[in-house]
Length: 93
Image 1 (tube, helix red, strand yellow):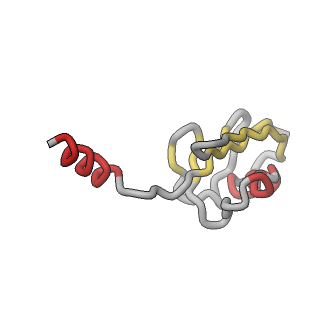
Image 2: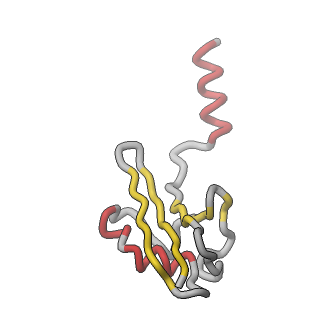
């Protein structure tokens, strides 16, 4: 068994759930087992982007976790960061 964490954050709330899983468990499986989708119904483990300590995982269903990993579930961006920066620059001008 290995110890991992599953994390998700919204502007109003954040949750980190610790759990033990078998070696070879994928990131998606850890998210499912954590039950975090019951706390945040907007989470879709099959389609949401995920990462380990800020580094994006290309295929969360195939990524095997290591002891101490924290799986982060990412929310979709509301606006492209480049566009947001451009909008702020236009406001200042």
